Length: 444
Image (cartoon, rainbow, N blue to C red; front, side, top):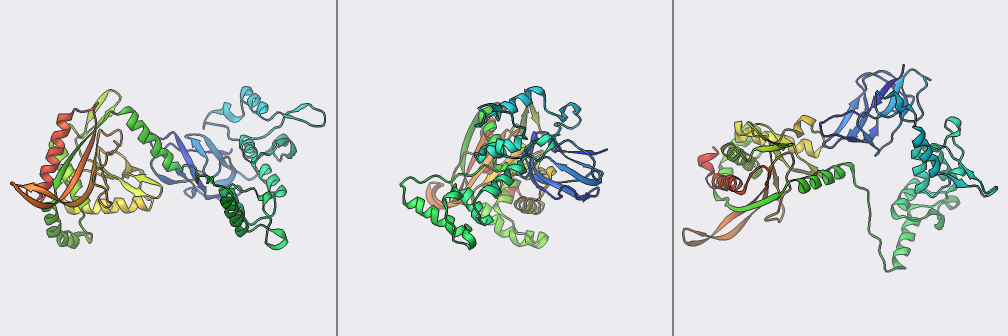
């Protein structure tokens, strides 16, 4: 009996997964433990292994499709074993193997076309993917011969129709034409037998741009990661009343500390101590002294965390990831340096394990490598506070009644006013400033 392949639920917050690629094609042989497909969750990209062996009988979803958790996305079984033509729905729901009469009625009504010959309305059977593809390309399904059961039109039938009826063009030219929204029918090809080349598309685009004063904006679909970030940031801003406090810290002694410890920690770990590593250590000590900031909200409860797990915001291609440095309050600067460097490397290479992205109690977002002095960070829920860090910049300040130039850094603490009030948040930020200005006494 054929075995279901379904979209796994890999975290408590995961509702859908984005299919990034299949490693097998229909008809391929599969062994238990082989990578079968790759998905993007709300936290990470991960390869999913096969739990059964046999032949890949069916793939119901393609690259970039967003699939609800537990949705059946394919079948593994014996060669020529029969499986449903379309995804039966959620795994274990035997009633989902076919569309309900109501759903079928809606789909049929969507594609009722008036037949020109007898002026009668003709019903067309087609999969949802085929209908979507036809709508995108302004194709009438009534003119396409379906290859599915009972003549049902599938997405591949629509694509085949488009390929047979469109002008000859190289794959790159088609891709550029689609990106630039240039109809291939309007282009005269300069290649062999009139085939359209990429240069022909470029010429048409340049000609269009020079003939009109209106320039269309460049549009692209949000990636799966970008959608997740957009959703979580919107939820944070809309549910947590943010308050942001700022203060300036004199980093003179932190710079001296880093200079003195650089050779020591590099000898121990082979890595260079950074200001971010020192900030993680300092924040961990301040949180231990002010546990009211090391909290999160679950429903109507405020959870007080014993351990300090600090998330470190890391910029990656087209997004942001927050790997977690665990038990910061129990580690020295050498161990924190190793953990932070490893987490940042894995994040940029998209190789973080799901366990490295959960259980954070506080987050640090450091933009000190850019020309940024101060910003308002958004809380990484369910945490209740986040620290924004600006660049270290020499500035004139008053020191014991005299004007001096000191390396100053602005700290911005955003906190959830539901979980704490201004006084305890201000006390924490004041403590952090004191630790950074007296690091030899408090961090070594």
